[in-house]
Length: 167
Ligand SMILES: [Zn+2]
Image 1 (cartoon, rainbow, N blue to C red):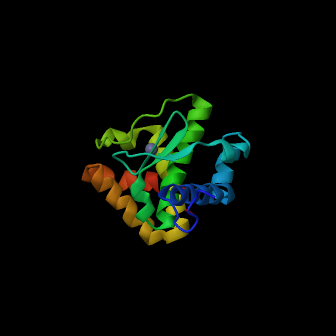
Image 2 (cartoon, rainbow, N blue to C red):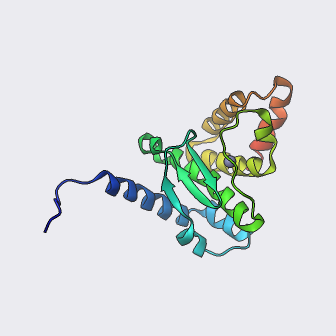
């Protein structure tokens, strides 16, 4: 056999991580509920295109395809899944509303005023609270508001809105 079996290629490592993400997504109760809410079926877990790409954000979804930055390989898996849940919401939005994926690199405050982003962040933060605890999710939300330069006067309202689905 031509293959050197002993040495694992980078491609194998990447594919393994993608497989792990897909399995977790498929078995996640929140993701399954979202699929039901969007009146779709579980085939979506097999179909959703998932790949690595050098992008200037952690993750983004374009026309129903999720792209993950290679830097997620160094992140704790819970954090990776937090981003995947956000992007999965966009996939469902794209399928049902034929919305084209916009890039997620705009830092202006309008970004957090967009309905599609609010929904994606609500699910992401709910996932974060479930897996890392309320305090960590709250800290993340604060950082998010800071990053997107939400004015002080709007912060309380926006934080409440983004954390609305936290149980
Ligand atoms: Zn988004």
